[in-house]
Length: 202
Image (cartoon, rainbow, N blue to C red; front, top):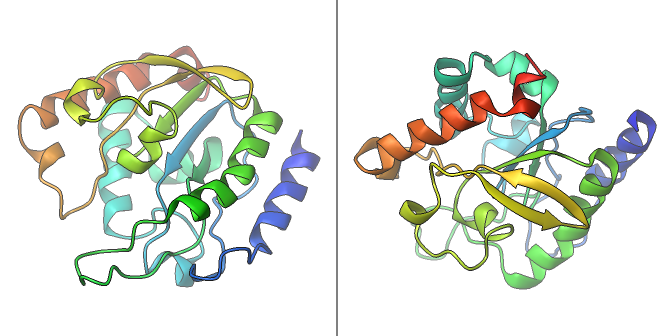
């Protein structure tokens, strides 16, 4: 498994398939784990720092896990495979209001990497962060209030697994800082802490 994952991550880092994306692809490294955290796409800071969730949103995200699940950032990065819907920075939105949302073709092109990760790791617990990531596993749900704070069963790439979605920890979002989002986020993290696959990492 480790050798296959090493090869996968090496190939991923060489990918230049999407013209509008800004390389290099960002990877959390070949961490063998039954738990996967799946983000949306790297921000503008991640290419220089060469790791996912490396800036402000990451600080919030890892504080959630440390406070609620007893695992700090270093431990998290060493024990949990960090993936994403798209692996390259998509660029800024034309409106100037944040990053560009990857288009359907970019998402489809990058999905082959995610599918291969499922085939290699056969994860038992998926933690999608933000609406774009959540929609890859729970495509019929439109509102965060209807899904955050719950554990869902799904199948992806032929693998059955549990999904505990989380809101995006962006500083621009107030959803996770006000009710009902704040309470639902706390409940989601409580469910992560109690999940057998997560507990096995501690």
